[in-house]
Image (cartoon, rainbow over all chains, first blue to last red; front, side, top):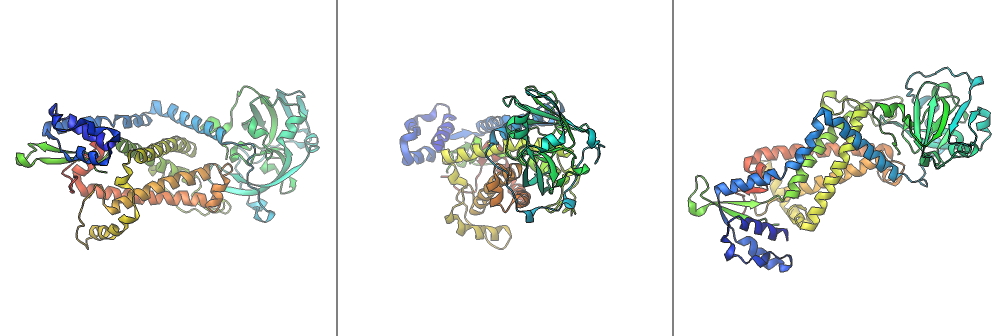
Length: 279
Length: 234
């Protein structure tokens, strides 16, 4: 059919000289025989006309120039932000609560001393464990200060899961803690609120979508390799979220808020990284 | 597919009664996809290499053995976060143009011009021999010779694979079966990287051919019309 249309277009170019061609042969239903008819008549046009036609065809490519907007600094930033936002939206759509991250046998776990550290500031923000509490606020029935033993009193989950860093490396580790969903239940969180934000002893901050917070593998993690978290891995409490990229899994938690409004997104997000970054 | 053919009257330097001939070889959707895709590929490879710079290895993080130090000046995005923005933006443009191209080729029937089929197999070796100067030029009777069809069909396949391996890296949990198919998350990264080099190899060969085949051939990817085709378009 396209052949026919092109044939016709070429013919249209010979001004009104098309009477010698059966214009009905351009019907889509006319079949191959007529199709050959349409193209076997080579219309004659002048060199000038040919150049005109070429120019017109070239102009039809102008939409490609729209990509040049990315070369203009003032437009580049908002366009790339939009691209990132679209990717986050798609990531949210691709997330399925029932999809579990792969888990691994104990033999596949990387030894603790080979578990890389990527602190944002210091390896040890100097948390004084005796005084440590998790401050809970926002859309919850029981806000206030929660001690580590209160959190550890909740059912414990252990999992061997992959920790993926945005840099490109990954490591399989053994994590233990309580499901964040258990804790949210304990504090009477309104799980219709879309976000959870956390703050950390080292001034790091992060936020999570509620669907991920309620995922069965999302942990308030206080153990790695069956031992209490070490300081450099975020003692006394960190997030372990096998369905998210590494930087979402904040260490040294001090505050947790259930919220409808995302007032602070996340440290790396504010530098330009993706917010959702679900794996 | 045989495109529309026209005769150009009074073309320069010709007897008026045997005017030049031109054939409409590249429909507009193909040309649009070609150029959009060229830009997208450029950005994706440039930003991909910047992303790779953050961890230029395929092994463990500890101890890290770097595979290659790619210069920052040959990468796009300036830093990891910036490169990811470029990559995550242009991957949509890349996918959209690929899908549009595929849909167009199928529904227009234009794929007959470019799709490599088993019957084209016999023509590949004579073309290779010709290009490497130890064989005569095989007869040309369609827009793309068998070797071209092979190259264009293969590179489309590589494009699909680049998206699929990329998806396995970006979403190794939601598409854990994809990562598994590729031999695991690590291998998905290796494949993604290898496919980029394969595409670059195609681009290199493609550009060499474009230069060798001159202006008329190059212009046809801009205007669709190829003047003086080597073959009889009818």
